[in-house]
Image 1: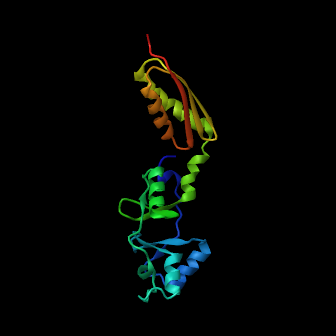
Image 2: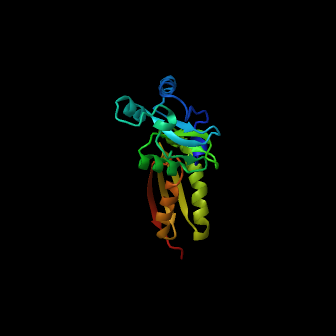
Image 3: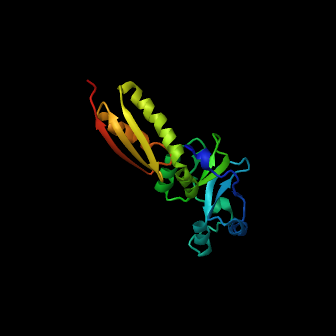
Amino acid sequence: MRTVDDVMTHAVISVNRTAPFKDIVKTMRQWRMSALPVLTDEGQVVGVVSEADLLLKAQGGDESRAVSAGQLMTVPAVTVTRNASIAGAARLMARSHLKRLPVVDDDGRLIGLVSRGDLLKIYLRQDEDIAEELRELIMAELIPSGSATVHVQVSDGAVRLDGCIPDPMLNDVLVRVARTVPGVVDVTARLDVEVPA
């Protein structure tokens, strides 16, 4: 699991920009959503209407007399594409203080939704799957470096690298490689340097 497409929800509840205030509230309550993408007739995401937007109107904090999703929505919508990395989507959510992001195709049409919970799915990978992927990546790094022995152990997503390497610079390289593997939560390296004779 490396991209948003691997973890996103494909069935998405949305509203058209002409949706009236009450219909938006009913839809949010029915589907237990705190925000909904607002779409054009062609399915393109033009904004997001949230509970905060509705409460602002309900409390009289908005003098614009907004009564439809198109008038209430926050624009521009923060979206992500299906081929965006999971880490990139997580950074975008954190930076924008969002709980979920609409996923769009190249034309800006809604194709899914990714939430914080969806992004956390990568941490449910089996330790052996993580270890197998790591062994393949580490072997690719070590082949041009001469003789080396690196053992990979993974427990609850925490990686431990033990063994011998011919160059001390490889230690940092292997740790960085390990951290790129989806599902890894920590990396510890205890690699001795044995310079070939």
